[in-house]
Image 1 (tube, one colour):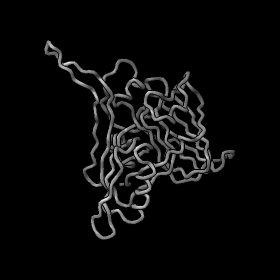
Image 2: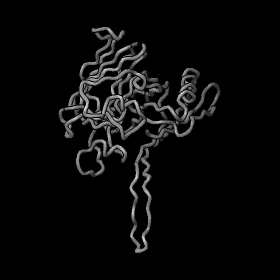
Image 3: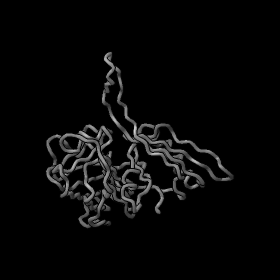
Image 4: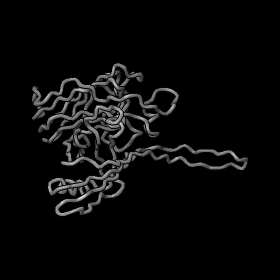
Length: 274
């Protein structure tokens, strides 16, 4: 199985973004914010998103926390120069958000922005051969989407890094509900419903000098303030496993290294979803 993949630097956050359609004020630039309450929304169930930036290494495109269905497709085209008309890479049309049934919270109305703060939303991701690009064009089609439009909180474009040895067994995926209980004088338990978010914690062992170098840079450069994308099982045949073990978030605390034996270390990483 392919080892986990981390995209520490999201080029899309500083790129010039445009979309083929926009519903009102829900512009594609909202995906550059660290906010689930401000989203991008298309008109209709297809959209083309274009990102133009300084020359960057690109091998991943993801739309974390979106409303795409399990039959949604994505096509990514990378252009070496922003003015090029022939792509250096074309992934073709591929499924990007596969998953088996995931029970969701019972909301009234369409499961979209009203669900994201309560643990709802899916991840649509493609990995591909690394390219140097100044322009990335993303075509998304989701004709089965019951909402009638495409919606996403974030857009990630960047180069993924992958360790030589995968995460240890025992990776912990958890959900935190920030709701508060209060007992009334009559004895009723009343709940002030608040946000739900996902966390992921895991360790990497047998880290050699090469992996130690980029992991150390990642810990320091991203710190606790800069979000990043990670997929623990990027090529899993279990589509639910692949789907739920993706996260776009920030470090809850800076990762730590432990020397396990001569010239090898173990690192712990703890992430909280944005």
